[in-house]
Amino acid sequence: MKVFLTGATGFVGHHVAQTLAAEGAELRLLVRKTSNLKNLEGIRGETHVGDLSEPESLRPALAGCDAVVHVAADYRLWIRDPKAMYRTNVDGTRELLRMARETEVPRFVYTSSVATMHFRTDGLVINEDTPVSLKDMVGHYKRSKFLAEREAVAAAEGGQKVIILNPTTPIGPNDAKPTPTGRIFVDFLNRKFPAYMDTGLNLVDVAEVARTHAAALTVGTPGKRYILGGENLTLKQILDKMSAITGIPSPTMRIPFGVAATYAFFEEWITGRIRGREPRATLEEVRMGRKKMYASSAHAQQELGFRIVPIYPAMRAAIEWFRAHGYAP
Image (cartoon, rainbow, N blue to C red; front, top):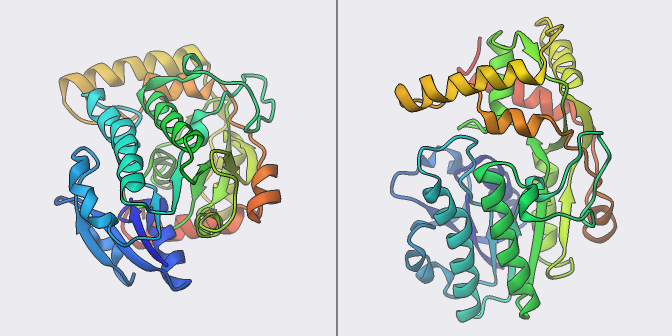
C-alpha cells in the first residue's frame, strides 16, 4: 500500500510513520523546506517538499497513492497571527481532501483531536456522541481543529471514505518540539512546576495511537469520529506519577483559577507581545484547564481494535527520552 503521510516530522506523525513502515507500507512523506528531518531517521520512505498553506504543492505527492494519512497540524496554544493557523489546519485540510478526491485516492485518515469535543467542568466522561458546537471551542487551536474536522465530516457525507481519529493527549518518546503536553514534562523535570491547577487530562500511549492509525486504513466507518484515549487523570495524579518515576517532589500547592489567569495574562503581554517569545502560560491554556478533559474510547475499541493500555510505561519512556536528548538533567 502506498501512503501519503503528512506530519511525519512531528511527534504523533513520527510514530505513525514508524508503524506504517514496519507494516510494509510504501511511504511518501510530506516535509516543508524548513522541516527538521531528524525525526525521519531510520524510516523508509521518499520525501515530498510541500506546505499545507500552499495546497497545490501537495498534488504531485498524491499520484498513485492508495491512501492519505493526514496528521500534520499547527498545534500551538499561543500564536501572533491566528490566520496562519487557520490556513494550515482548516484550509490545508479542505484542499487536501479535495485533491485526494480529484486524484481518486481511495482512503483518507484524518487526525483530528479530542480538543474538538465538548468537555465539562464537573469531570463527566464524554464520548463522540456528546453534543458540541463551535461556541464550545476555547481558543484558535481548538476552533481551527473543529472547523477542519467539519470539513472531513462534510467530505465523508459527500461520499469520500474519510475516517476521523481524535487522539486525547499522546505521551511517549520523540516529542522533539515539544508539544504543549511535552512541555509539562520538561518543566517538571527542570523543577519549574511549583504549583498545579485542579484540572484533568486523558493520557494515551502514542504507540497505540499510531497502531490504530494503521488499522484505520482498512476498518472504520467513513465520517465517524473515534476517540483514542487512555487513562483519565487529574493533573495532580500525573505529577505524582512523574514524581514516582523520577524522585523529583510533586508540587503540593494548588493555585486558584483567578491567580493562574492573572499570571497568564501578564505572560502573554510581557513575554509574548512585548518580548516576542512564546509565553510559559496562556489564557487559552488556563481557560481549557477549567474543564477536565475526560473521555471514553469505547467506540474505537469496538470498531478499530483500539486498546487502552497503562500510561505509566509511556510516561517513563517520555521522561527517559527528554533526559537523553538534553531537555532536562
